[in-house]
Image (tube, rainbow, N blue to C red; front, side, top):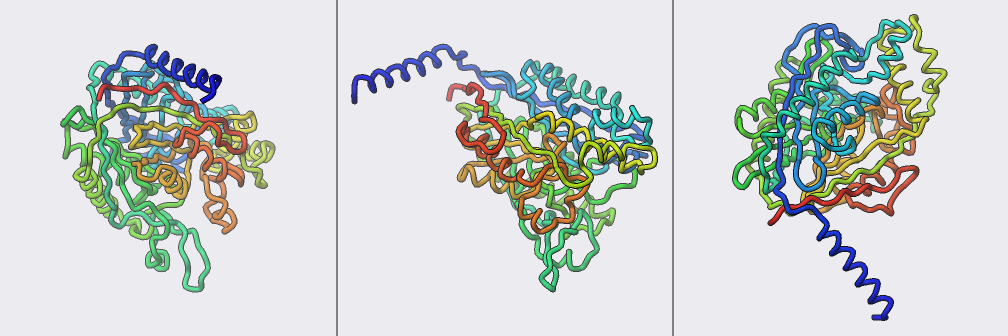
Length: 478
């Protein structure tokens, strides 16, 4: 080794040692779990203003956890709402960050995407109210009350935080829930109309198609004592909807059943990348199917728990990759065209769609970037992806870390709507219409952001997204 090379090695070693000596003392990691009711009032807009709420079949909840110790706290919360978008998403991050004593980028917010639930987009609502239009996406006052209720629940959970020493991983195949929207007709033609419920005989008899059949459960333990279990499964979470009955649907029923099974273990559920995954093959929309689907999901949760293996936590990292997705340039989605639809003659739901599209368009045109965060324990990762990402992205994320336990939550920042692959665009996926606000070319950027977050690779980027930001690792003594 040359003298100059030796000097570089020594300098690097000294720098590393200095960082170790300057690091915080090894402190136990702690976990605080929290919940709050976020049920909408009567008359509230549902699924972005498609209809209004009339009654409550079962309540909507926000369930989450905070990791404390080592570096700044990390917050994760899953909300029984359809979507949280644009300024509303940032409001959740800022409010929960303040409650936890951390920074907004370290707050991971996901929605489960039930359709008998609200879309939160206060910027879109402002556009509607400024024009005194009939359409309504959400009530900003209720939204703020809900955010503050969750922030209060988080804050009150902090003094009750428990040490956690192990992370558990378990999975189970789910029986007869998920199917891909895409299926092949007897004549070889491709259709994409296998919706959340269907009575179409061809859609029912066709194979499930590309899905992720596994429900994954990531759990936190204090020695032999379980503290919280977070389950992930990729499927649109609807049995039937649109009647005005507010509901957390079959995932909410399954989660509550598991909470009764294990009262001392906080149960959290997350929808994976489900933009093109529904229960249509196994669901006709009959009301009794909600309980049947809940039972199947509950059975998978139970099996995943039984199969859980624990590993001692020695460190974690939290990384965020900024992702730039271009707004769509399709006809009808320019600022002028969207603004032209914000008039009284437009039907109320079309007003809402135009307002949501315009709000995203203006923010995207101004250079807004989406966050792609990951909580990485080394042997297990929790990755959050935006909007209605297609299941291909979840499967791609798992391939990035073969041999690791990669859990993917979809429905982060919801402003994108559907995030399909290029192949779906080529095949003219019929779902890619009013709820699709990103431009072709998004797939390459999505895959690069997934790679950067999961691998922590600052040199791999595509388009306009930047490198993953890496926090200082938090550690505990083995």
